[in-house]
Length: 548
Image (cartoon, rainbow, N blue to C red):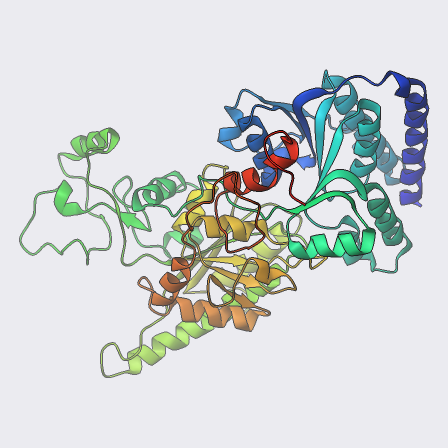
């Protein structure tokens, strides 16, 4: 019933727009060349691929309008580009929250539709040459962009991230009437466009075959921007100095190695012999775990040296815990329970490993597993539920022993800090399971850009990105993930298995922007290099031949 009311409101609005179009279609305004509107029906700051599109268009001189909701801070590089303008959609009035759902839901959708139309038809002063729309969500954006393109003469480019109806089917099932309506809507309004961009070859092949797409069809694999790289010890040091307040929680204070900022963090430390006079019997730098002595009389001078950049460079600590990073939306389509169960198994195996090591008579015959710090980034509806479960395990409630080898924290990082965390980690974990089995997790792309090997949950087309045993490992359940963590970390912090995987992530020499677009996933480069080869010819037809 609620969705029926939504559809009625939407159809009434479309009828009104069609009437307007009927009267003005013969007076269609001339489009403004070298301009683009990029529509994100969501938080702009949490839509990296669309922000990267905006950067790329602006870099070739396009007047770029980025349309979506305000929220997370956009990537810093985007804020400094003069050709980019942010047009934020208005939120529904707060008083609607007190209305019954049957009234509030249609009102919110109607407000959303009017806000999008007002932005694309009125707030953008001249008709843009191109309108790029992110899919999903499909309803109502595909129909609205289709309508606006006909009213203003713009060319539509659909960036297919996934299939909207397949996400709805996770909740309602494939046979549900609403899923069938959503599929029809997506296929009808998504069939015709000037160009279609796909995140995988599998998605392109499926949609071309099943929906008979019209227009130019190209695969634009996700690639990280140039700022994603392996972090240096100095960058890791600065990052964890910045994060020390959010990591100063009871569950971590006794778990992490002792440290004394600004000289040391749980992962890095300054060589003390360079800061303080050497003393007889002082341990060497490679065996000392941290700077834990009280400040010496020259501490202020050392702080000044740090500020001026003349102090010795930080180094990674030999007693640091293993750092695993996972990014999740905390939604049912990403089963965080797999990682939770894997942490439970790792804790048990680490305890058993310690007992085996203590029982050996020959030193080095068996090595204990390291402590494991798991940092999970992202926001979503299931976050609190899972973090409460983890909290109980860590402190040992319900008659269970407290965790000794594993800690897990959830953080939300600024855009400039996220690449540094990935670049500082030992292993990345992806729990993404595609609702359509046709898309790829962008989080893995980011991890690869930072030289971070990945343990990824397997699904149909994952091998377009993750090559099992070459640049990462593929698991299908918690037992496999726990075994992979144990195998990769058994010789931490000098893991040859991790270094072997990391070596395959070295970028090959980039191709020229004028080289023909290739679909070979091994052709790895930055987002800008990939975009220039694939999308630039589509929007600058006079510069290069359009690929088909």
